[in-house]
Image (tube, rainbow, N blue to C red):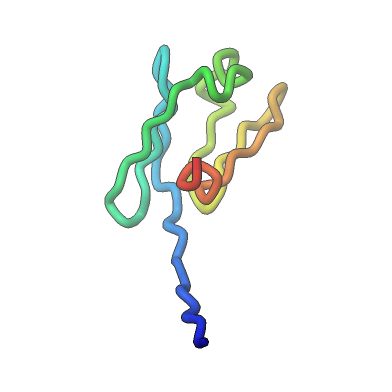
Length: 76
C-alpha cells in the first residue's frame, strides 16, 4: 500500500478584529475566520494596543501575553 503525503500551506494572519462577541482573522489566502470570543475569554479584557495580528500566530502583548496560532484556528 502506498501512502500519499499532502503538504498544506498555512496562510498568515493579515489582520484581526475583536468585536463584542467574535474574533475575526483575515488570512493571506483571502479567507476570513470568525470564532466566538467565548473560546478565548481572556481576550475580552485586551486593549486595542495589545492586539497584534500578523504572521502565523496572533500575539497579545502586555498583561495578557497570550498567543493563538493560525493553524489552531483552522483546525478548531
